[in-house]
Image (cartoon, rainbow, N blue to C red; front, side, top):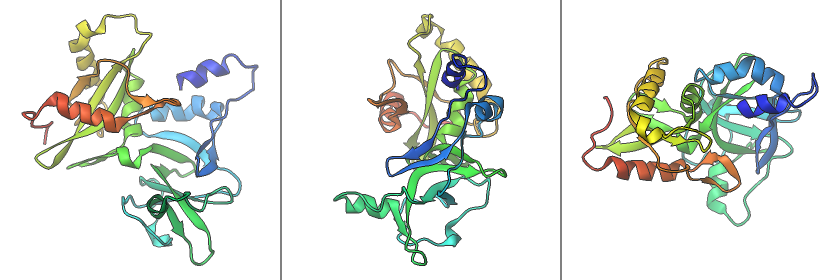
Length: 264
């Protein structure tokens, strides 16, 4: 959000920045302008509502289905969840690819056939929901959700709460398993432009993180915070694409086998 805010300040009045949503397998899917983001949706994002990616573009239909990690060969309307319920985005339209080249297993996991229409639908691997105005709210990657005994936590409903309220840091939600229970852990990265010797201030940072966590029901059970000694591992093409799988391995090792997890 700060990037969009800074960029719009460089443009003439009335000129917007648009942020399309999609994937290599289906692009574009939805779109939203900076006026709506900065006026309204950013504030909801900072309260843990997810990231609004706008409304579907012309010709594209977006469904939200129950979350599953298994292949779903055939489309059925019974898979859909009600508006406002977090599920997986499934898209259909003229830009949706039919299959992966020589990757049959990936095709089975990501593609669905509508036998009534002949359409091939693509499972985005992203979770989110639709609001009462037809907008899509992105809540994170399906593979990055943390399934706790109290329900799932989604990265883009948790991380923006802390990123907006704890200066000089970026956070990443991961899960660490102990005795068959998945516990949420928040990894904390110091941003490169932070002009503080913040390792000396870690107790204060944790105090601030805990204060922020207490503000919302879905973040309240986050009590384990780890300082990551360096930049987060990210995709070389996208600094925002954090490799949380690698962070989870690091967090597991850092906490050690004697760590029993957060509150039950």
